Amino acid sequence: MGDALKDTRAAVEAYLAALNAHDADAVAACVAEDFVNEHTSSLGRSRSGRAEYRAALTGFLEDFGDLHYLPERFLVDGESAAVPYVMTFRMRSAGDRPVRVRGVFVFTVAHGLITRRTDYWDSGEVQRQLA
Image 1 (tube, one colour):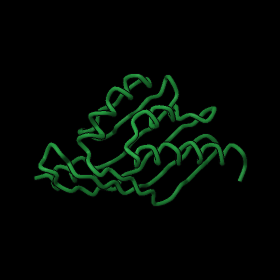
Image 2 (cartoon, rainbow, N blue to C red):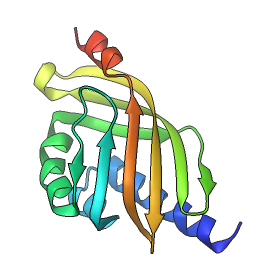
Image 3 (cartoon, rainbow, N blue to C red):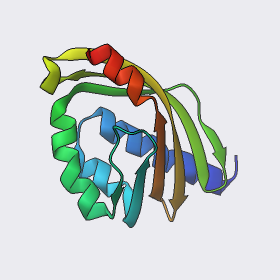
Image 4 (spheres, rainbow, N blue to C red):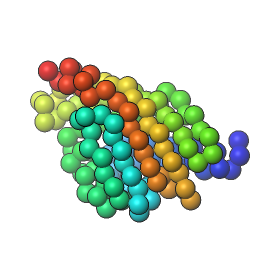
């Protein structure tokens, strides 16, 4: 595997590990200053910039108890990576109801930091499980 592929995978793995550790500062440290976090789902909220993203992480990690992303595989091409995942959590604002949803992250990495994350997941499935 080439250096660019290794660097991209390492950046994505560090990011996912920080999310799974519920460490907002470590998550923010994995992204570039001009990071773009795009959600394609109607329930998701897109963010621009590391500062805006970091500010939102605290509430997200508090409400999504026991949050865990389980990557199904890593598809890496240069500075891009696609990671199908299974996300599990307990929605604290909904009485700690458990949720399990599949999705796909698409990342862009530059200089060891994530510059863009696009998240594809089914908000209807989350709503169905919380109903």
